[in-house]
Every structure is written in structure tokens, then in C-alpha cells.
Amino acid sequence: MAAISQPSTLSKVRARLSDYSEVVVLISFVTLFLVFAFTTSNFLSLISITNILTIASIKGIFVLGVAMLMISGEFDLSVGSTLAVGAYVFGILMEHGLVWGGTQLLPAGLGGFAMLSALLVASLLGLVNGLIVTRSGIPSFIATLGTMLAFRGIARAMGNSELAKSNSNADVIRFTGEAPPLFGWLNGNIEWLNQMGTPAGGARMAIVWFFALVIIFVIVMRFTRYGSWVYATGGSRDAAKAQGVRTQRIIIWNFVITGLLAGLAGVIQFASRPAIDPARGEGWELIAVAACVIGGIWLEGGFGTIIGAAIGMLLLQMVEQGLILAGVDIQLFQATVGLILITAVISNTWLSRT
Amino acid sequence: MTEAVLEKVQDPFADAPVVVDMKNITKRFGTVEALRGVDFQVRAGEVRALMGDNGAGKSTLIKVLTGVHTPTSGQIIFDGEEVQVNSPADARELGIETCYQDLALIPLMSIWRNFFLGREMVTNVGPVKWLQRRKMAEQCRDSLKDIGIHIRSAEEKVGKMSGGERQSIAIGRAIHFGAKLLILDEPTSALSVKETNKVLDYIRAARDRGLPVIFITHNVNHIYQVSDSYTIIRQGQSVGTYLKGELTQQDIADLITGAREK
Image 1 (cartoon, chains in turn brown, purple):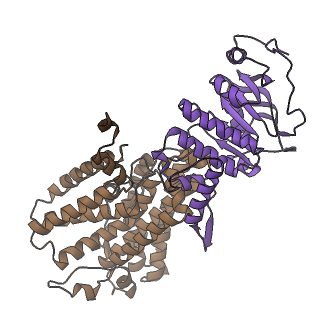
Image 2 (cartoon, one colour):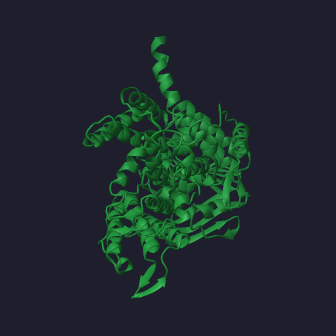
């Protein structure tokens, strides 16, 4: 009977791999990368790779917040709307300055002020989420579904308000001035990289900010007390509380950070494409959740990594770009994402089953 | 006194100072009276079993002591001083360590992270609290070794350990940090016989270090092996406190269920 009591090689490998939540997403990423590289012409070109990186980086910025929230056991479905509000604050202050009651309180084009205002407003929206979830005790999935709608309404209202009155195009804010250096810093072209190929690449500063943020978040989650408490909050909230972890505070801060990152993504996107419409960021909240889940973060919280979520986002963007290049109908992209999502979750569940 | 007393037993803790003195504790949840004027004492160096059927109020009483619940009325005297225990953090501050039945550890986290959870050793780098990972891992391993708990690696995830191993880590942690009082809430309820014996050994180890222990259980057999005295609670009231040897296992069972009245 020794054969039965000995764990099989497969289950030993599985037990070893189950410690690394990024395994599935990493294998999927490499596999899909190779598939596209061999089957799709132009996929390995500079412009294609840099496009993937740039777009994935903008979304990836708020995915980091969503990932940390999910590890602490909470959702934020309002990131897309928060991003839109942040972009509106930034865009309105850049194009019109602060106008109220017919008087120009502040001139247009104060880049630093506009950016800080956008980040502050986005953080406050995150704080609203955090307070609703911790004070009312309703599930964050529902609470942020509500604020997703509410914040979207705020974004629309801003586009139609007196703040943006001088705009002829209802709802849409377009920056018509000359782009300030701030825009270049936030999301300008990385020329030296883009000139390395023909046609020129599309690498933008968003990539730099995203990778810097990934490093910061990885360090926070692994090496600081905050990170340990985030895992504890998601892993078993009551046990964490019993050990003196201030779980409510962790959750509120995670929501604030997520709001801040959504605002930052909105500002960075506006800096390269200086126009904002009310539908900006719609559906991105689900992309973020998908990236996290594909990246190995558990829906219940407590398990998963920032790196996994970041690779998950890169994977989704790579698939979108790859399918476009392959000439596949773009409608199929969502079907593909759905398929990847389900496959990834099934694989992750299989791995972690002990 | 009760008829259940079989013989007069010498009380070895008669002169020991009282560590915890809970007086006339009541606790009401809405219209439900969970505790109806309970007195409860623990003296230095003893293992006190707190017994009662499910819903008798033993957990509520302990949660009042550990700050999870605030008593409706009553007095708590700890180490000779009246105290207000309004949160689990207050209880810890006083030196009261609790191992909850299923709230002890976080399965997805490593042993050392669990061991130091909420009390991490950190280096302050500006506002950042940088974990002293290696130091904590070493101290966790050494401290567990001191009370006879050997672990393979402090990096191992708690979720991959057996129920008994987890319970010993939780008790080891409580002994390590619990300066004055150790409370164990049903520590043996989900364990095999072999694992239970180990846990009982750790309880003895704690007592031998001079740490008073409150041991909550409804397993008469387990408390019979390690407890110095028993307090029995039924329907939110204390039935009585007895010394080891005063009662047979059958007496205890009868008092718990109310098959025999005071």
C-alpha cells in the first residue's frame, strides 16, 4: 500500500507551486506571448510591444490599488468612475481654470495645482468608499457598485456644470492650449526608445510610473507592517482584529490609495490624450478585477501578489493587441478575456487545493 | 455548599494572590440575559477550568474579560486594581493573552508573521514600518523551542500544518507574549487524542512558568487531567467553583447539564 500513502509527483509539484500565486498567470503570459509571436506578424515589432506596455501601464496603475484592496478582502467597482472624475477635475482646471459665479477665481493652465486637485478629489472619493464600507458594514461589492454610479454622475455633472461652461462641446473637455512640460513628465513619449525602430514605437512615461509603482507596492506588501496587515485583514479579519490589527483603518487606507491611483491614471491619460468625455474609464473596474483574479488573487482575499496582478494586466492588454493584429473581430476580445479568466481561476483553484 | 462535594480537599492556592477577580458580572444582549451576576476568580499559578454547556455563558464571560464585550454591569479587578477592558487591545495591554478556538491564526500567512501579528518588530523609516523579518523568524523559532514546540521553518504557512501544530503555535505565541494571564478557548475541541495530549502538556508548561491559565472547555476528561480547579456555569449563572478532587467526572457532567441541582 506504499504507493497510496506516497503523494504522487504531481501532487508534490502542485503543493510546491501553490505557494506561488503568480504561477498560472506567468505560464499563461509566456504561452500566449509565444503563440502571438509565432502566429501574428508585426506582434514582435517595437510599436506593438510599446503600445501594449503603454496602455497596460495606464490601467495597471489603478489595478495595483484594486489588487491591494482585493488582498485585504474588498472590492472597488468605482475605479473607472473615480478615474473619470479625476480626469475632469484635471481637464477643467487646465482648460478653464476655476470659474465660479461668473468670476475667474484661478487662471487656466496651473498644471501642478490641477494635478494635485485631481488627486485630492480622487482620494476623497476613495475615502467615501472606505467610510461607507467600514461604517455601514455592507459588502464593498455593493457599496462600490453604488458609488460607481454616483461618481459617474458626478463626472457627467461636472462636464455640464458652470465649471466647464465655456466649452462648446457639451460634456467633453478638451485641452486646447499648448501642452505644458508637466504633460511630458506625466505621459510624454520616451523618444530614445521609440526611435529604436521603424515605424517608431509608442512608449510613454506611463510605463515608467507604472513600473516604479509596482516596485513600491511589492516592497510595501512584502517588507512593511502595512503589507502584513493587509494580508491579515483579508486572510481572516476576526483573527487579525483579535491580534490587534486595525483592520478598519487598513481598509479605509486601501480605498483611499485606490482612489488616488485611479485619479493618477486619469491625469496621466489626459496628459497624452488631452480630452475627456463622460464615458471615460467605463468598464475598467471589471478589467481591473479580471487582471487581479487572472493574476492569482483570491476573491475572498488574503492571498495573491501585486506582481501577479501586474502580469495579469499586461496579459489582458497583450491579448487585446494580439487579436487586433491577428485581424480577429474585436468583439471576440471580450469572449477571449472571459475564457482566460475562467481557465485561470480553475487552474488557480486546482493548484491551491490541498 | 453542594451535595456534589465528595470530600474536603486542601486548597493549594488558598494563599495565592488573586490575579483576576470578576464581580457580579451581568451582560444583556437586547432582551437576552447572557450573564446574570457571575463571580469568577483566578489565582496565581493555577489552571482554572471554566466549564459549561454550549450557550451557558462561558464564552460571553471570557469575552467580557478580554474586551470583546463590555459588561452591562459588574466589576473587573485585575492584579489588585479595578480595570475597564473596552477592547482586545486593552486586554493585551494588561497582559491577558487569549487563544480563540478558531480565530487563533491566519492560515495563509507564515508562522512568524502569525506569531508577531499586531506586535511586529519594526524599524521606523520615516512613516514606514519596515519589518525586521529575520529577527522575528529567529525569535519565533527560539521561543517556540523553549516550550518544546519544534517547527521545521518559521517561513512555513500555517495552513499547511495540522490542527494540533496550529494550536501549539497559537499557545506558544500566547505564552511568549502573555505576561500575566493565558486564556484558552476550547483549545482541544478539534484535535486528535495525541494532539490533545500535546496541548495539555503546553498548558502544564505554561503553569510551570507561573502563568495562570483559564481553560474553557466542555470536555470533562481534558480538564480533569490538567486543571487545579473548576468553575461551572449554567444559564448565565455560576453553579460553583470546586477544587481538583472534590468532584468526580460524573459530578461535573451532572452540574454542567443541570441533571443535579445545587
